[in-house]
Length: 103
Image 1 (cartoon, rainbow, N blue to C red):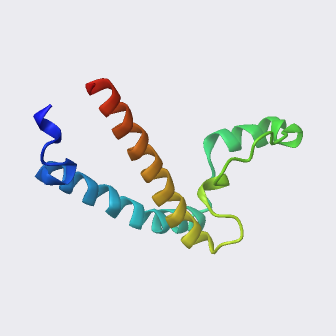
Image 2 (cartoon, one colour; image 1 turned 120 degrees about the horizontal axis):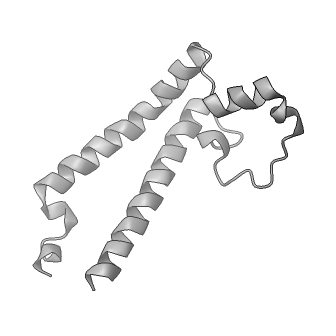
């Protein structure tokens, strides 16, 4: 249990890992822009278009952040915010689970 005495940020490897994740979140809008610049489309969406399945698709739950953006916001800013929210949620859930399992 002494692993939590210094806190998570007291560990150098944790600070480096969080910094790396933050850099990836900051770069996410650039990757989104680049995907649009080269007309990238998800392979599953391409297959749905090719088979005609996309014409019959119904969205049952668009999700909290559909297409990794914030509805109504600038697409690059929306991608950044979605990256921050998704990363924070994932980190929070995994840290909470870790504490429960460490018991």
